[in-house]
Image 1 (cartoon, rainbow, N blue to C red):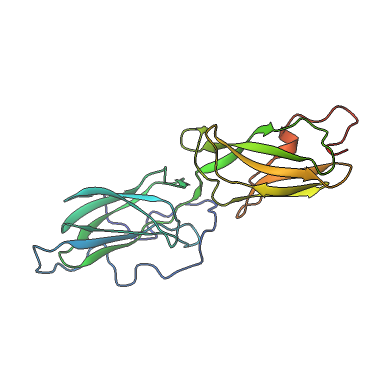
Image 2 (cartoon, rainbow, N blue to C red):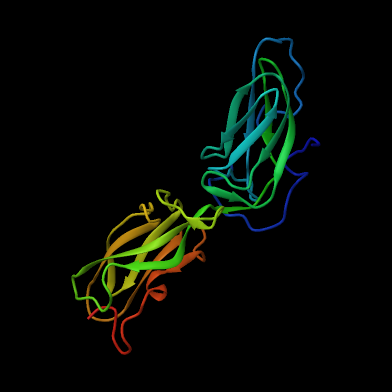
Length: 239
């Protein structure tokens, strides 16, 4: 794999924001001068950044060369590991821990003994790996009485496998309600069946809405009541 800078593999597309812009790779180089410390390990430091130059947290970085392993990016999009000196091929797999990388990025890196090498990879687009789906469960069929507390759940799906994701959290999402419905409590982590739940109650007679939405990209959301079994014709959600 040819050496790359943060611009040589740039892709077009819309990337979600993560953390604020940061100065990446200060003092780093993919091909630093060799140092005469043959018995010492070096440090491999890689940043995975989006199209706006912001770090992508929760992405995996694989490396293979004098040793082989996998790193995980932190909140700043940084991943690092101590490795034997020598050449390495670095790549970012599509399925990260909490994100999906949309465009393949990678580089060749030479790590010096006793030194450090790396830097920001080509900018890429991404999305959250775990997301809510319109598969909805209601604890009680509507209409609901005023003050009655009802559990509502949405199925959490793994974007890599397109299957339910028991135990995984909807990181980056939140619950919200409006109209005659309010949220009493909520949880963003899926249960053993792969559903995340909120407890809601009616505050008066009429209709309302409940959503699980992406706090970064508001267009990515599930309208829970619209996806659920509606009350009988002419009836409201709350009576």
